[in-house]
Image (cartoon, rainbow, N blue to C red; front, side, top):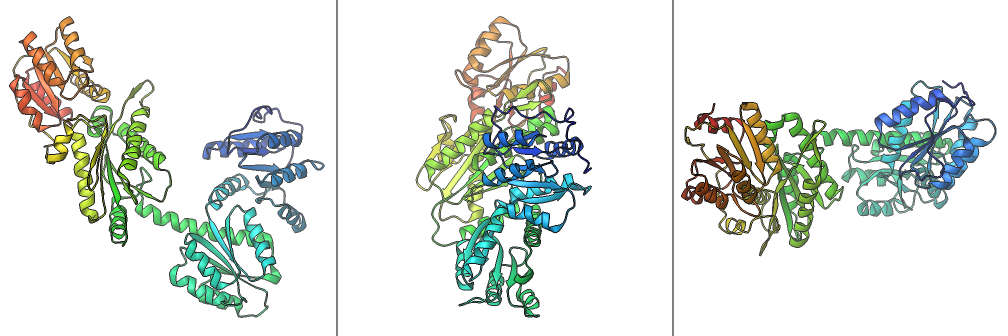
Length: 595
């Protein structure tokens, strides 16, 4: 694979036009071997999301680098004839772009020259694993940017030397001049993952520092690398005995060995972190599990001097019906995409804990909360979900909405807190969903999408049954059905159920006014009316339809027991409770005598 075909570039992936700007975070590949170029290109495009810019010309590479300072990294072939690759590497290092140098096995001196230049990694293209090593190096580049290292040494010169080496590896670096100041730095930055410490220091030496660190941080949370310039035989063993993970003698210091030792411990810590996280993370969504949320919530509310905090519950509306109508594969896609939308709205901010607490439900724990700010954030979540495209198959798409209930307090235990948030979220479901309720210590906020009548439910805390018993209605046979609901997904799911039953024609309307206009133009045997709709609600439309079309059968779709009495007064023929399923639709139509 090390054989170079410098002039044979006809089969290389096309390079981006020099006049165009690369996307932020792009990777530049400068490689003369078409075989290696294809292998690396295939790996990067298949296993990462980074845009790739490819060239086999060092001069062209210099122009690309000059025009695109936002490059994440460059993979540079060091086998070009002349000084072409040196110019490319020097310019990349000057602009702070990470360099992964590709070269054949050479003497240690040549490798050292590349390290001195400040490259991020060196990979041998003679190694059959080289494409995989390139991917691993890119992954390390991303990981190191979020990994903090503390360097403790009383020699400012050597401390600065180590810090610069680690900065070349893209780590976040903190410095301390002795053990005592090192401990203070750890208190300020408890998320430091690696400590590199000298042995012989004033105030507190490396042994004592290591012992103190291990009182608060175990080996799978923080790694310690000991250093010493004293050639004393027992120093390495003593460092390890006191809790260090590794030891290097300064007289034998080799920067390449230092890089690989530090990255090895960073790899190990990341592996332990990932294993731990897998036990507290929902596989499907990447959010925390309900058990983790419960344990975290109990610890959090027990803290003293807490300000108000909030717990929000988000439920995907009509997910059970969606599973019935489109299948569980589509339902799972909706769950994943909704989870991604929620995570995008809150990012990786430490002020929030995101968890999945049920099949259609998510929970957000706000560590600090202001009622106006909270409803603004949750309303953004609701709008983002509504505006997200959920595609089923190639040509069919549908809308998804969520119901959100949130409780703000500073004196409830976590179990009460979560229960009240669930109750508030349930009220939104009963009011046809797609809205937000936030209840604070002294006030509540309701999103403008929610019907005004929810205020009465919120004040009275009405408990509404989730399902109403389907009752037998007339025995007339239904041939044509009109579906009236402002929710596109409800209409699509019910239409899917009717198609599965067969022998039924149907039309759709989005509100009571539109339904009446359709009824006056065409003949129908049965109308499914939603109750809560814009322009004209289902109760008013059903009353008018009963007067104008006495033989028309009307079934109300409702999530609220309180609306049943009002609907019965106008003489409707039946009710079905949301969320309903295929079995309920079939039972209702069997009662009509059409099956």
